[in-house]
Length: 403
Image (tube, rainbow, N blue to C red; front, side, top):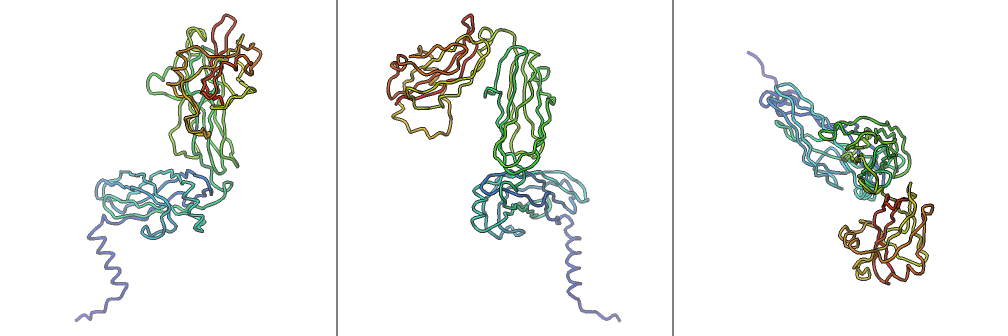
């Protein structure tokens, strides 16, 4: 006769685990991890942090998938129900794959934007780090928790993050039409925080592919170490203009990972003469600033334009009275409304100045100033005129106001 021995705690635990594996083989998942496991974020600035989640199932039993509907910035890990929430990311991550009874690991890339106000609130609460938390739900399992540690540091110590990219041609526009073999460059203004190596490539798609799916080829590799600062301007190499048709240009950032779609600008190479078959070239203006208050000594200044015999400064009246509007505080849209420009151009300029082609600044003469009415809004522009009277250059409209 066999003697029964009492069950120990070890026996009970082993029995529970075995019963779980036998009765529910698809109900187990490993904890989610992030690569890297931590990153530095700057105090007082928003930053983009790229990383990769990794979460595994012991067994699928069929087609597997994993989903996370949101993430939170907290002060604690690993309990998703504990701690203070400082912010929420309402972005869903989802991925499918894996079949059969074998284990399967999901990897999901994410670039999380950490807002400056979230960092500041955490720091004011005495924290030196934030925890970014996500829960992942598998097809056959319950919640699977993952945490990323975000160390709050100075801007100098933070990892390099690119927050935005503004792409334009050297005259500030995003679209150009120009004749064959004319010189043209592009420039990219990058917003960033932290320090680190920027890796990017200037690329172009030429007319052979831009009528369908564009195929880009590299023009120039960029490797530059960015240090303290918040903005950087990069200039492209000379862009090809020997082939007629549509060209697309972009600066594609390779590292660090960016939280935005790469912007694209375009230019069209055509046959003809500027100001005749082709539109006038753009002329950049530098003074006065948009919405400036006019004074007798206000200086109008613009960039030199090749081939200009004379420059014509034109000033158009608008029907708006700025005294009835809110004061301009220097933000928002700094260009006149298209409807205001169209209305102004339907009438002749009220005044202006004719300037020799070797001069790029002028003030209004006393006679020209007399044609301006106090308390009104005006639009002004500069035209570059060639030897034969053709308008070969034209600046965008800017608004100014009289006191």
